[in-house]
Length: 217
Image: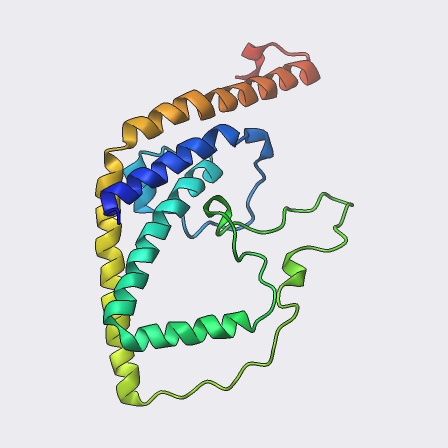
């Protein structure tokens, strides 16, 4: 099994294969801050600047986050029996919770809103969000935990968090080595689309207002 360096390399490779399919024209505005990407040290390690579109960043950060999550899951199974049991119970409850539109998405779309914003005056007949929970089954009552079990579980959660931090640091360090590849792809595939969009915007302003470019300043 690949170590962290190998898994980061694979994640970057997959992102580089995906990036040529991305089109700036398909981007829609977000109504909520992305918790996965905002302030993420992975974005810093990748060398993403403020002008890199969120979806482009999200596609790579999601794949890298899976590396951290998989490492924590493996550590939990091997070392944290109480937390593992609670997570299994949570997964069982989720299976009974009916249709979940965000389950099973490719890494590029995980954490994003499942539905686009409706156009004014053109409401959707239905949205995926409205279908959430369809087919839900009755949930069995949760088994109460003793105070001792709660304390032990909190300790295991702290160990899980420490594993996530350590793995995240290792992923960031490995990612720094791929900055040149990431920067080259951004320059070749993303920046020309942004430049073209800005040119179209200023061309539209000139056509609508009948003003030259100097009149905008």
